[in-house]
Length: 228
Image (cartoon, rainbow, N blue to C red; front, side, top):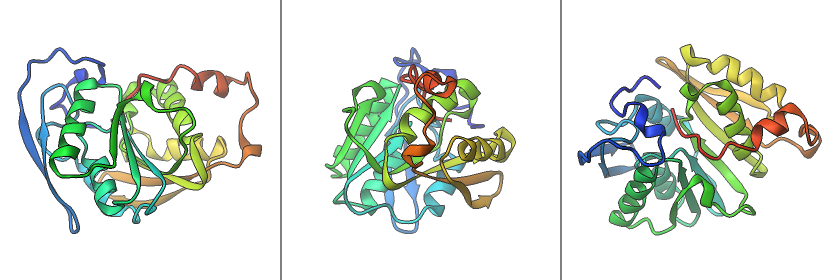
């Protein structure tokens, strides 16, 4: 993403930036949240414009089951999901432990007790997701991005879908082609300002790459990538 407020440190597991607490208001038609932020996390000074486009464009999430915010930051996506689907369990994951802690604190502060804020390595392997919402880490580079998406989109439940917001000039169209080529049927939900929101449906088992293929090998180490 284009936000420079967080700097490169939001990719780190333990950011070295000195604490600089703040707040961000998430004001949507159906959700009003005031969330704690800090330095060393993604977009700590405002709701990222791409995140806003995503939250204003996606359909309501499934009302039960397990939902995923991939790259949760301080929690605007996860807490919006939880507000819109209060009976569902929302897994908010990030490589950045400061983000994970902030998201957990924000969920507790607003009474969303079905949010599970965890490091990416801590999610139980048997959980499957009815929906994934993400403002993914495009700037980590294609190999790492593709590995991360393979790892998590392969955990979609049958009939589930991932909604991803990507800037046009950072490769939204090429990402859509790659997702389709890999077997996740993907279309464009909306295009607004400089962003596209993509919907990638769970791929059928027959579309999975064979074990040992380059795509399969690339997916394995993706335990430490994060958003934007």
